[in-house]
Image (cartoon, rainbow, N blue to C red; front, side):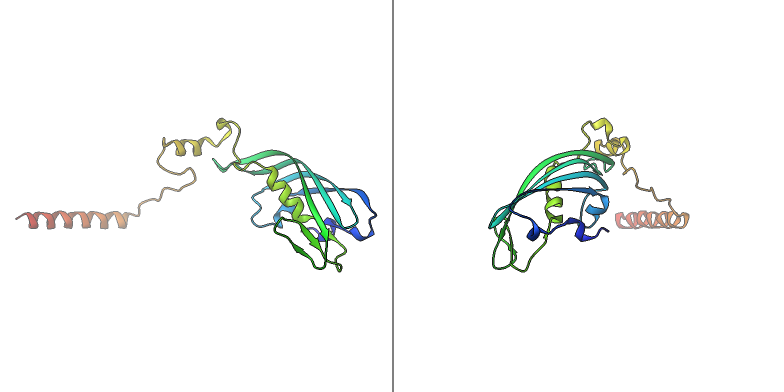
Length: 185
């Protein structure tokens, strides 16, 4: 787990104007968020904090590769990501989020924690349905099961029948047939 200070910007020491920051996001970064849905990642987040007198704009450009699993076959899948987002941060009497997703920082705050912004921007940049671009890239065993050409799941273990249970099944079926014969008479 990374130190949170790596993703905190001490904005009170920054002057009015634009300030650039770069963050590297990997699997360890995303493991802090539950559920992340990512197996691994190699993402570069180029950010720019534009500070004004009473507010800030936080622009993010996410670019890289995220490793996840295919929604169709559950096999590993690499997804390219290239997404831009803007967040608004205002200064106010107390720290809170507004209904418009604007972060308001109170006078006691001195650091801007950008982890949530980076995570949200990455997730929003991914497609809603994460599948292999070609169906042929999917796990063939799963595809057979999905199309109905086999009647069991690929990783499902077919239970071996215990001979003791098989003998008991034979007894119950013989008894049932005797009961049926008696009821017919």
